[in-house]
Every structure is written in structure tokens, then in C-alpha cells.
Image (tube, rainbow, N blue to C red; front, side, top):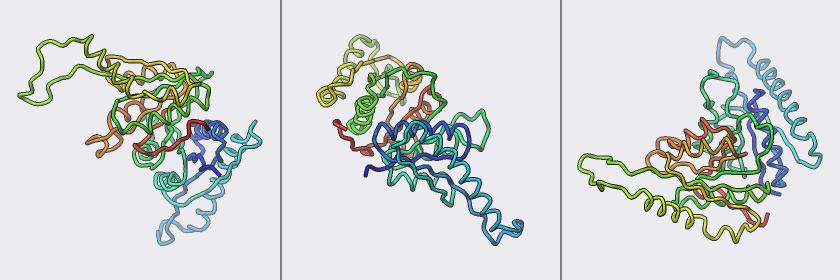
Length: 295
């Protein structure tokens, strides 16, 4: 059996929207759907909690009610979709990261029940996109209608192969067009003493960046002959370019940043995109996917 698609559910509107999105994705992939609700156990030694056992039972009953609602929603119109639900002990971040070890995709809402509405990305979503071992989809409120197009951010780095594989595979599953987006900016001096040319040939730089994009996706046209591909090279900050494109597409696929920014967390570009994109965003870590082009 295929690995499941796991979605975190907490009863909030964003999490139920994520569950609906995950159900559609599971149906497309022929994969089972696993709903996960995490509850924190009250330690029995806390003196201010007079009946910890009762509180735990009430919390689990509330969780089961939320999961039942999400299961009904997921199965609506999908009688053959295999759906399971689980209440797990512990914090949501750790529970979902552990569940992701046996998943082909982890899905979360952009926000949960906690925090302030003006914070665009919830703490759980932020944590799992940075640490989960499988690709993570962050789902915002779905658009009224499908646009039939997916965007993928292309950096030209060798470690981006899994990102491109995921995007092409997803476009093939959805019978959607794929827009490969490569953004570049004019080099700037980073340290005192850096030597930069006094004049830049913007056209030459643009042509070189277009060549880099073409080389990055070379060979995939043959592997995915049914995917209509558009190459989009733009002189812009990568995050802004992808956010702008997200308003015209159903999904944006990006890679987790590498280097120092990744060591510090998710990375500035990926962080900005999942905060501000108008469409769901999938973050793919290097070497985190292995998909078949014929599936």
C-alpha cells in the first residue's frame, strides 16, 4: 500500500480546509489519508488540576468529535478513499513530524487555534515545514475555481532535483500546466573591497539565467510528455516573484533553503513565500521525494 498523506487537524477552519485539500490530493495519488489530532496530556502531579483523568477523557472526546467531522468531510464524494484518524499525545509539532516519517506528504493549515490572527503563519505550520522529513503542504483558504496551473521555483542548484520531480509529478496528476519560475537580481557588493563591474549587461545576464533555467529542467519534458511547461525568467527577488505568481496558480512548489539560512530555520525565501502566497505551498526538502513519472 502507498504511504499515506497525513494532515494535522485541530478543529480550526484552516485545519479543516487543509483536510479537504489533503483528501483531494490523496484521491489523486491513490493514497490513504490519515488525520492526526494531537492533545497534550495533563500531568497527574500538577496540583492545580483536580481531575486530570477526567480532563484527558474530555479532551480526547472533543478530539474524536473533530476527527469524525473531518472524516465525513474527507469521504464526501470519495467512497473509495481510505481514511483513518488518530488522537496522539504530545505537542502538535512533534506529533506531526513523527507521523511524517511514514508519509509521502504532510498537510497543515496556515494557522491553527492559537496565537493572533495577524500572524500569517501559525507556529505548528512554521515548525513542521522546517523540520519534517517529507514534503509539507501549507494550505490557505482554497480559491473559488481551479486555474489548471502549478508554479515551481527553480534555483538551478543540483540539490533541487526532488523539488522539480515533485512539481512535474503533481502537474501530471492534476493534468495541469506547469510554470517554471526562475528569478534573479543584479549582483551587489557584500563586503568592503568586493570588486564588481561598473556596468552590467542586463540582457546578457538575463540570457544566462534563461540558459540556467533550461538546463535545470532539461530531460523532464521527455519524462513528462503530457505536462505543458512554461519557462518564466524574471528580474526580481525570488520570494516576490513566487508570491506574485501564486495569485495565478493553484499550487506553488518550492525547495527549503540551504546553507546558513537553512541552518537557522526554514530559510528566508521559503519563509516569505509560505507566509504571503495566495495559493497552497509545498515545501520540498533536498532528496525528500522519490516519485514515478508514470504514476
